Image 1 (spheres, chains in turn yellow, red, cyan, blue):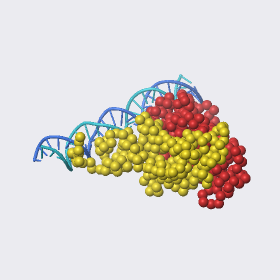
Image 2: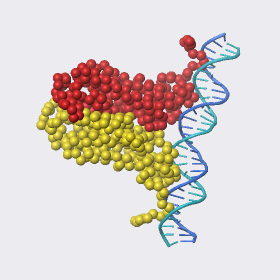
Image 3: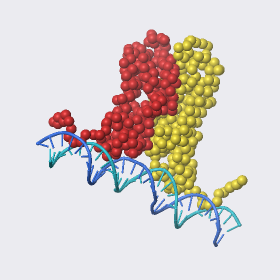
Length: 224
Length: 224
DNA sequence: TCATTTCCATAGCGATCGATATATAAATCG
DNA sequence: CGATTTATATATCGATCGCTATGGAAATGA
């Protein structure tokens, strides 16, 4: 039971949160393998012993940076989704918020696209980091699947719709927005994509899947 | 004017095409920065002087590998698109072919997802390679935009549809398929996504964009 | 055969990689 | 005040990075 209102020894001479944020931006833009400790030290404004004392290793720093990214940026993308009263409005919020958030600000301080979606760390040698990124991505699919299933139970979505496939589709659109944002697409272009996608909602979420019976035009769709 | 039916000197002791294919798979899976010359030499079955004699440098090898990938794999994704008689069938072919081709074969010899879409080389230090990847990605958008515009002129797509936004949307879906394939999604899951996406076609490509006039239910859509 | 040309195997180049040893500086505890 | 504890600054560590020099092997041309 350590109280430790104040810690012993010489206090840290830099802002750990600010340093972590700087490291996050660098990993976000450059990826794991292409970012060296020297790069990180320069961006964080510290020397390597301080980095290792505060974060342990490059791998541990990346893991913490990823969690920092999720905590700091994921709400900008997913909070509207979570708060929406209907599945349709949830997906619409997800895509419109993504279109607004994913492009890089003109300052170029933060890179375009989602760090989780664009992370290629799985193939960059470190197994553990690959698993973490995989799980983070799977979380997006889970959120969509659960929300669509709830909407289906509520009658907003036709009973015959394959919720798993639909969730993967809306996720694919959102992931594509990240790729295009990384390539320089701006908020206006991405918003147009989001609105175009939503225009397909009725045809998508009202019709029956595949070869089966078509539950056409049930009372489900709230119309435009 | 060198005839050179047969070249002078000791002939090359390895198959250049096979070595390039091996390098391509490695860059495809691991990216540029995470792939070392030693890795490449092991995969290609040659020593580094042979690599440099045949390909020049790591950067040049990556560029050639990328072109090799486009030449060898892009047709599997885009040939059905190019051959389709209508814009709708073209997009459908693109998505279904992508669903079939993008997942990694169970052997694991080739990684999942498109090398061009998933390449993060732009942030990995080399400016030139970044530009090449950017252009390769833009080519996909160009193909889609041109095909949709042709379809719109042919009356297959409503006049009010924002072709640019629609092209970006279908591209986004296809890019999302690559991300999900890289994460382990199989052909069945991706095909379900492709079919779900096509179910949204009419709602998407028939309605007018944004705030403008809605040219609802014109004679354009060929119905289901 | 022998000079020429080209390729390959070995070894190693300087630079940078991720990570640390050491010594000093700055804080708390007694 | 020391004694202790923690952080920073400097100077590396061995390993690996991308790349190449060197010399011998294997082909052609004369």
